[in-house]
Structure formats: C-alpha cells, structure tokens
Amino acid sequence: MNALIIGKSGQVAWELQQTCPEHINAKAFGRDDIDITDLANIEKVLSTFKPDVIINASAYTAVDKAESDKENAFLINATAVEYLARVAHNHNIRFIHISTDFVFDGSKNTPYTVNDIPNPINVYGASKLAGEHAIAKYCPDNSTIVRTSWVYSSHGNNFVKTMLRLMTEKDELNVVSDQIGSPTNAKGLAQFLWQLAEQESVEPIYHYSDLGVASWYDFAIAIQEIAYATGKLTTEIPIKPIPSSKYPTPAMRPSFSLLTPCAHAVHWRERLKNNLREFK
Ligand SMILES: NC(=O)c1ccc[n+]([C@@H]2O[C@H](COP(=O)([O-])OP(=O)(O)OC[C@H]3O[C@@H](n4cnc5c(N)ncnc54)[C@H](OP(=O)(O)O)[C@@H]3O)[C@@H](O)[C@H]2O)c1
Image 1 (cartoon, rainbow, N blue to C red):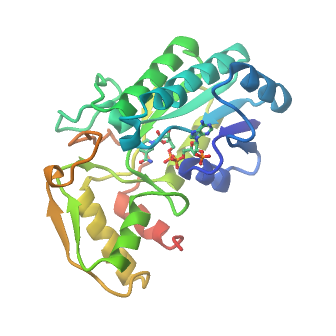
Image 2 (image 1 turned 180 degrees about the vertical axis):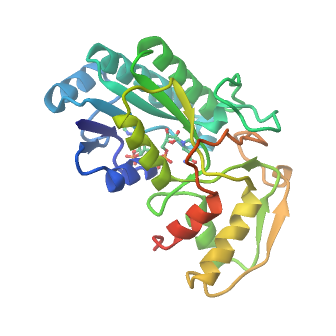
C-alpha cells in the first residue's frame, strides 16, 4: 500500500512517519513537495506517486492568528481540503483527514458525539468545519474525518513544550482552568490513523482523543508532576488556576470540548507519562 502523508514537519505528520507499519510504503510531502492550494499541482504529484491512501496532516493551526488572517486559514483548511478530496474521489484514493474539537461551541456538558451539530465560535473552527463539508460533498464514499483535541508530541510546538519551558524560566505560572477537554498524544492518534488506512471500510467521522478529562490547569499540574518525578525538571513552581477572562486571546475557545472516547483510548495521563520521556 502506498500512503501519501500531506505535511512533513507537523506534530501528527511526524508521528505518522515514526509509526508507519513496515508493510506500508509512506511518503511525507511538505510545502516544498506539493502545493495543496493548486489542484493541477496535486494531480501532477499524485500521478507520479500513485497513493492508495492520502492522510492530510497539514492545516492552518494558528488559532489566534486565524482571527485576522481568515483568507489564509480558509485557503488551507477548506479550499485545499476540497482539492485533495476531489482528487482522492476521482482516483478512488482513500482520504483520511484530521479535524478538531473546535468545530463545537462548547455549550454541552457531556462529551460531543459524531452526531452533534457543529457550531464553531472562532475562525479556525469555522475553516476546519468548511473543510469537513468539502469532504462530505466531494469525496463522500471513501473518506473519513477524525476529530481530535489538544494535540501534543515531543516534536513540534505545543502546550507541553511551552509549559516545560516556562517552568524553567518563571517563578510561578497562571493557567486557565475553565476550559475543559482532553489532551491527546499525537503518537496514539497516528497509530489510530494507520489503523483506518488499512481497514476495509471507514465511517464518515470518528472522534479520537485520549481518555479522561482535564482543564489546561490540570494538564499543566500533571506535566510538572511527571517531569519533576522523572528528572526532566529539577524544581517545582507554584501553578495557579485562572479564568479565561484573565487570559484574553484574539480567538474565543469552547469552554467544554470533550469528545466521545473511542474504544481503544488510553488515559491522557498515562500517555503523557510515556511520551514525556521523549521530550528533549
Ligand atoms: N494541535 C492541536 O492541538 C490540534 C487539535 C485538534 C485538531 N488538530 C488538527 O490536527 C491536524 C494536525 O495538527 P498538528 O498539531 O500536527 O499541526 P502542526 O504541528 O501545526 O502542523 C501543521 C502542518 O501543516 C503544514 N502546513 C501549513 N500550511 C501549509 C501549506 N500552505 N502547505 C503545506 N503545508 C502546510 C505545516 O507545514 P510548515 O511546518 O511548513 O508550516 C505543518 O507541517 C490538523 O488538521 C489540526 O487542525 C490539532
């Protein structure tokens, strides 16, 4: 099986390359190898590699920047996704795409199911939802959308890395405690995506996040606890919970974005403990 990973340097794209099963011939293409905003270029690249499956791990992920850069967010998260979906459909290639908990508005207080109606409250979420709609329209049969949340990996930029840095630089930290979700380790997500690549058939939408519930504050506490216990941090600093109102950001974020867990999910703390070892 030939698998084309779109995105090379991103967190999930990198973990896909690390976890690729031996019998799958995978190539990861970055922005220098393929222009996903150009339909003809996608066709050209695919005609040489001939993938059986495309996993789109690229996205405009700068949630706050998207508020003032709507055009580019929609170009990458909606238009480019439409082009990939159209090409996948025309060549009967399975299309696996990653979406986000931020398609929901956070007004529920029980986990979001795949049947819940999205209602994004920021530009990033709206652009990702537009990408989902493009897939449903242009590649409805052999495609799947995997919504995930709060992704981190030892590779790339994420909350865990930021916290570990701040915990060495600052004397104390204030972290938002009124946004609830589930941290998700990109390695486990990548393994789930490979499973979908090989399955005979796929559902239109899956929710995949690690098990359990956390606020960003809980997550920060766990990061420090585990990093200190395993010698990654040599000191511990006070961490205080604050409301989102005390940490204003350009983009609004859902206050609750827990996703229904999938059958084989592992608790986020367990995943964090295992993955922190790989952080430099
Ligand atoms: N991170 C999270 O917390 C989170 C939560 C929920 C869902 N997701 C979804 O999970 C997926 C993977 O996220 P991630 O955390 O791995 O993202 P990431 O680390 O920010 O990586 C995004 C990748 O997209 C690539 N990209 C951006 N614009 C591009 C363009 N014009 N052409 C080609 N490539 C482009 C980037 O390439 P460059 O490095 O060259 O810019 C980068 O490799 C995305 O669909 C995201 O929406 C993420």
